[in-house]
Length: 209
Image (tube, rainbow, N blue to C red; front, side):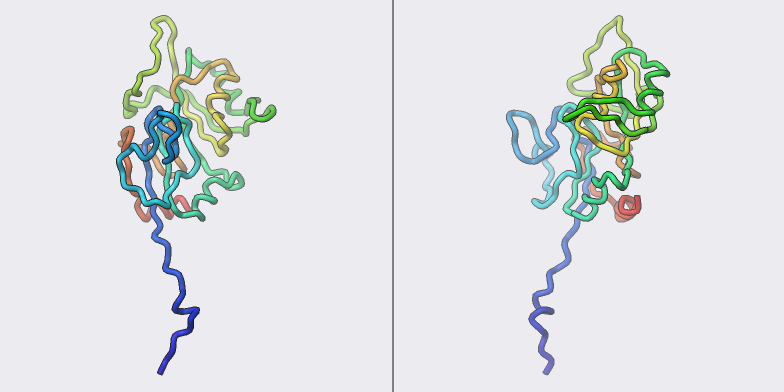
Protein backbone atom coordinates (compact mmCIF):
# COMPACT_ATOMS: atom_id res chain seq x y z
CA UNK A 1 0.00 0.00 0.00
CA UNK A 2 1.31 3.45 -0.96
CA UNK A 3 1.08 6.05 1.79
CA UNK A 4 1.34 9.75 0.83
CA UNK A 5 3.70 11.80 2.92
CA UNK A 6 2.36 14.57 5.13
CA UNK A 7 4.35 17.08 3.07
CA UNK A 8 2.66 15.98 -0.14
CA UNK A 9 -0.75 16.03 1.49
CA UNK A 10 -0.26 19.57 2.76
CA UNK A 11 1.12 20.98 -0.49
CA UNK A 12 -0.53 24.39 -0.99
CA UNK A 13 -2.87 24.91 -3.90
CA UNK A 14 -1.66 27.29 -6.64
CA UNK A 15 -2.89 30.83 -6.15
CA UNK A 16 -5.73 31.95 -8.41
CA UNK A 17 -4.00 34.97 -9.93
CA UNK A 18 -6.19 37.75 -11.25
CA UNK A 19 -5.36 40.83 -13.33
CA UNK A 20 -7.68 43.77 -13.97
CA UNK A 21 -7.29 47.01 -15.88
CA UNK A 22 -9.54 49.91 -14.94
CA UNK A 23 -10.06 53.48 -16.07
CA UNK A 24 -10.03 55.30 -12.75
CA UNK A 25 -12.34 58.29 -12.95
CA UNK A 26 -11.35 61.79 -11.86
CA UNK A 27 -12.02 62.34 -8.15
CA UNK A 28 -11.76 58.67 -7.13
CA UNK A 29 -9.22 57.37 -4.62
CA UNK A 30 -6.89 54.55 -5.75
CA UNK A 31 -7.92 52.34 -2.83
CA UNK A 32 -10.84 50.30 -1.52
CA UNK A 33 -10.97 51.71 2.01
CA UNK A 34 -13.06 54.81 2.61
CA UNK A 35 -11.32 58.11 3.33
CA UNK A 36 -13.64 61.04 3.94
CA UNK A 37 -16.40 61.46 1.39
CA UNK A 38 -14.33 60.69 -1.74
CA UNK A 39 -15.40 57.69 -3.86
CA UNK A 40 -13.10 54.65 -3.90
CA UNK A 41 -12.51 51.62 -6.11
CA UNK A 42 -15.26 49.87 -4.19
CA UNK A 43 -17.71 52.32 -5.79
CA UNK A 44 -16.97 50.94 -9.27
CA UNK A 45 -19.56 48.25 -8.52
CA UNK A 46 -17.29 45.38 -9.63
CA UNK A 47 -16.84 42.24 -7.52
CA UNK A 48 -13.07 42.25 -7.18
CA UNK A 49 -11.55 39.36 -5.18
CA UNK A 50 -10.65 40.47 -1.67
CA UNK A 51 -6.92 39.91 -2.18
CA UNK A 52 -6.67 42.16 -5.27
CA UNK A 53 -5.04 45.58 -4.86
CA UNK A 54 -3.77 48.38 -7.12
CA UNK A 55 -0.22 48.31 -8.48
CA UNK A 56 0.91 51.82 -7.64
CA UNK A 57 -1.63 54.61 -7.54
CA UNK A 58 -3.13 57.62 -9.26
CA UNK A 59 -3.98 60.74 -7.27
CA UNK A 60 -7.69 61.42 -6.82
CA UNK A 61 -7.48 64.39 -9.21
CA UNK A 62 -5.80 62.30 -11.92
CA UNK A 63 -7.50 59.71 -14.11
CA UNK A 64 -6.78 56.85 -16.44
CA UNK A 65 -5.26 53.40 -16.27
CA UNK A 66 -4.78 51.55 -13.01
CA UNK A 67 -3.72 47.90 -12.80
CA UNK A 68 -5.09 45.69 -10.02
CA UNK A 69 -3.80 42.21 -9.19
CA UNK A 70 -3.06 39.69 -6.46
CA UNK A 71 0.18 38.68 -8.22
CA UNK A 72 2.80 39.94 -5.76
CA UNK A 73 5.69 39.00 -8.06
CA UNK A 74 4.33 41.14 -10.90
CA UNK A 75 3.54 43.94 -8.46
CA UNK A 76 7.17 44.01 -7.31
CA UNK A 77 8.43 43.81 -10.90
CA UNK A 78 6.37 46.78 -12.06
CA UNK A 79 7.12 48.97 -9.04
CA UNK A 80 10.86 48.25 -8.81
CA UNK A 81 12.56 51.43 -10.13
CA UNK A 82 15.51 49.35 -11.39
CA UNK A 83 13.24 47.90 -14.10
CA UNK A 84 12.50 51.36 -15.59
CA UNK A 85 8.92 50.38 -16.41
CA UNK A 86 7.27 52.92 -18.71
CA UNK A 87 4.08 54.79 -17.89
CA UNK A 88 2.59 57.21 -20.42
CA UNK A 89 0.49 60.28 -19.63
CA UNK A 90 -1.60 62.73 -21.61
CA UNK A 91 -1.31 66.11 -19.94
CA UNK A 92 -3.37 69.25 -20.55
CA UNK A 93 -1.51 72.33 -19.39
CA UNK A 94 -2.36 75.98 -18.91
CA UNK A 95 -1.40 78.11 -21.97
CA UNK A 96 0.46 77.09 -25.13
CA UNK A 97 3.51 75.17 -23.97
CA UNK A 98 6.77 76.20 -25.60
CA UNK A 99 9.36 74.03 -27.31
CA UNK A 100 11.93 75.13 -24.74
CA UNK A 101 9.67 73.97 -21.87
CA UNK A 102 9.20 70.60 -23.59
CA UNK A 103 12.98 70.32 -23.89
CA UNK A 104 13.47 71.13 -20.21
CA UNK A 105 10.95 68.48 -19.18
CA UNK A 106 12.67 65.88 -21.34
CA UNK A 107 16.13 66.61 -19.89
CA UNK A 108 14.89 66.65 -16.27
CA UNK A 109 13.75 69.40 -13.93
CA UNK A 110 14.12 70.02 -10.22
CA UNK A 111 10.95 69.34 -8.21
CA UNK A 112 10.32 69.44 -4.49
CA UNK A 113 9.83 66.16 -2.64
CA UNK A 114 11.24 65.76 0.87
CA UNK A 115 14.13 67.67 -0.67
CA UNK A 116 14.99 69.00 -4.11
CA UNK A 117 14.95 66.20 -6.69
CA UNK A 118 16.12 66.19 -10.32
CA UNK A 119 13.77 64.11 -12.43
CA UNK A 120 15.24 61.52 -14.77
CA UNK A 121 15.34 62.17 -18.52
CA UNK A 122 12.06 61.22 -20.18
CA UNK A 123 10.23 61.37 -23.49
CA UNK A 124 8.01 64.43 -24.02
CA UNK A 125 6.20 65.65 -27.13
CA UNK A 126 3.43 68.06 -28.01
CA UNK A 127 0.16 66.45 -29.09
CA UNK A 128 -3.36 67.46 -30.02
CA UNK A 129 -6.11 66.57 -27.57
CA UNK A 130 -6.68 62.81 -28.09
CA UNK A 131 -9.92 62.26 -30.04
CA UNK A 132 -10.82 59.19 -28.01
CA UNK A 133 -10.56 60.96 -24.66
CA UNK A 134 -13.95 61.45 -22.97
CA UNK A 135 -14.91 64.75 -21.35
CA UNK A 136 -13.85 65.02 -17.74
CA UNK A 137 -16.53 65.17 -15.05
CA UNK A 138 -16.44 67.85 -13.78
CA UNK A 139 -14.92 69.64 -16.80
CA UNK A 140 -11.64 71.53 -16.68
CA UNK A 141 -12.15 75.23 -15.94
CA UNK A 142 -12.53 77.14 -19.19
CA UNK A 143 -11.08 80.62 -19.70
CA UNK A 144 -11.97 82.36 -22.96
CA UNK A 145 -8.75 84.35 -23.31
CA UNK A 146 -6.31 81.71 -22.00
CA UNK A 147 -5.55 78.78 -24.30
CA UNK A 148 -4.53 75.31 -23.18
CA UNK A 149 -2.29 72.70 -24.83
CA UNK A 150 -1.48 69.00 -24.57
CA UNK A 151 1.72 67.01 -24.19
CA UNK A 152 2.51 63.32 -23.87
CA UNK A 153 5.05 62.30 -21.23
CA UNK A 154 6.61 58.83 -20.89
CA UNK A 155 8.16 58.28 -17.44
CA UNK A 156 10.12 55.40 -15.94
CA UNK A 157 9.75 56.69 -12.38
CA UNK A 158 6.79 57.68 -10.26
CA UNK A 159 7.45 60.25 -7.56
CA UNK A 160 4.60 61.86 -5.62
CA UNK A 161 2.57 64.08 -8.00
CA UNK A 162 5.58 64.09 -10.29
CA UNK A 163 3.96 65.14 -13.57
CA UNK A 164 2.13 68.07 -11.97
CA UNK A 165 5.30 69.24 -10.24
CA UNK A 166 7.28 68.92 -13.46
CA UNK A 167 4.96 71.02 -15.60
CA UNK A 168 4.66 73.61 -12.83
CA UNK A 169 8.46 73.80 -12.66
CA UNK A 170 8.62 74.94 -16.31
CA UNK A 171 5.75 77.42 -15.90
CA UNK A 172 2.82 75.46 -17.36
CA UNK A 173 0.56 74.10 -14.59
CA UNK A 174 -1.29 70.84 -15.23
CA UNK A 175 -5.04 71.14 -15.73
CA UNK A 176 -5.84 67.53 -16.60
CA UNK A 177 -3.75 64.39 -16.20
CA UNK A 178 -4.61 61.04 -17.81
CA UNK A 179 -2.48 57.91 -17.61
CA UNK A 180 -3.01 56.36 -21.03
CA UNK A 181 -0.55 53.45 -20.95
CA UNK A 182 1.18 51.13 -18.50
CA UNK A 183 3.93 49.37 -20.39
CA UNK A 184 2.23 47.60 -23.29
CA UNK A 185 -1.29 48.18 -21.92
CA UNK A 186 -3.14 50.98 -23.71
CA UNK A 187 -6.26 52.88 -22.72
CA UNK A 188 -7.99 51.99 -25.99
CA UNK A 189 -11.77 52.33 -25.81
CA UNK A 190 -11.99 52.22 -22.01
CA UNK A 191 -14.20 54.91 -20.45
CA UNK A 192 -14.12 56.23 -16.88
CA UNK A 193 -15.31 53.50 -14.52
CA UNK A 194 -14.70 50.62 -16.97
CA UNK A 195 -13.10 47.39 -15.72
CA UNK A 196 -11.75 44.50 -17.77
CA UNK A 197 -9.61 41.44 -17.13
CA UNK A 198 -6.27 41.12 -18.88
CA UNK A 199 -5.70 38.41 -21.44
CA UNK A 200 -2.99 35.79 -20.88
CA UNK A 201 -0.92 37.44 -23.62
CA UNK A 202 -1.18 40.86 -21.96
CA UNK A 203 -0.03 39.39 -18.66
CA UNK A 204 2.95 37.71 -20.31
CA UNK A 205 3.91 40.96 -22.06
CA UNK A 206 3.85 42.79 -18.72
CA UNK A 207 6.12 40.20 -17.16
CA UNK A 208 8.57 40.46 -20.06
CA UNK A 209 8.76 44.26 -19.93
